[in-house]
Image (cartoon, rainbow, N blue to C red; front, side, top):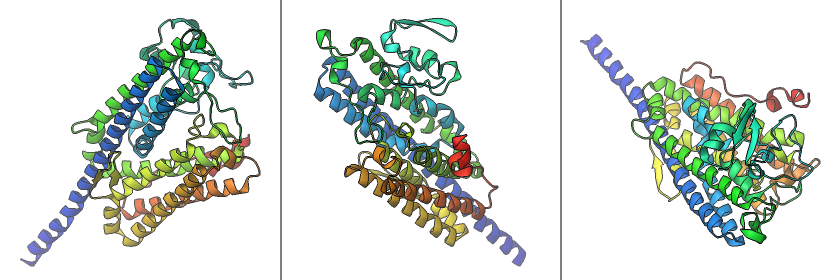
Length: 415
């Protein structure tokens, strides 16, 4: 009888842990769905603003389209934590958020622009109705979403040939940022979309076609990804059908975004090179927000809580709950480090909004700017070590997080 009771107690003790994992993964998938749904809603608002700009070009309609783009970045950046660990997202992400890009592929650029070894860095699709690409003659007399996605995007397998997504749209709204490490974003005139004699820099109708096609494509891509996280969607099913694999996907997303992607490629590399071209949102000077919302996305996933664009909250059982059940001290440490990182990113964001542009922070010899950026980098690296401890506390195999030469082998950056 004692043995039977002991066995039953052990079974009952094990069941909540499995149920907890399932609940945690449901929260994770619900947050992903809400984040992509918010991204879709804001992309549709951007689409409306772009339509208004093209229909009636003016300083006001261009400013409204820029504002809509900035608003669209808020929910999307919080979804980047779902990229690593979820192949469906990772394979798709380059269609909507690839960077940096050789903007001369798309439109006119400054005479001093150099695209390195990319043969299409000066193609200028807006100005050319036909051209040769990958040995084939391309009819670009009509700029369509299919032309951008199927023909131009990552042409010849070159990642810098970014023809679609947020950053292509950003370039078409702001134009190049020619201020170097001085304050100031791109200054594209509204007359780049004007008709007749008011048109500046030529091909204003085609520029509008490109902007419209890129925005329409962004909306359709976000519609697809929102569906992937809805009930019955493949992305949701992949993380919920196997609890342990789903938890690994969560931790992989958190650790890889924290370390190699954000701390390394998006932040420390720019400091090392003192190069504003390494900014994530380089045309609009929105990088401080991009970094902040990336960090907040990691915080959201661990704590099982996301505040939607409309102010409503999606929340439920969290990875924090699961880790705390395994080791309270590890959960406390990771929670503390995540809070600290978000605080450092908030300080960077506040400084930029107060007039200390991220471009300026990257300038060689700007110790105050470097200190702001590196405080956030250090926070991201430290929280990654705590994520590794959470992996161990949960009894999972070691997870290989994305790395970066800027963190792992700094000398290689300059070779």
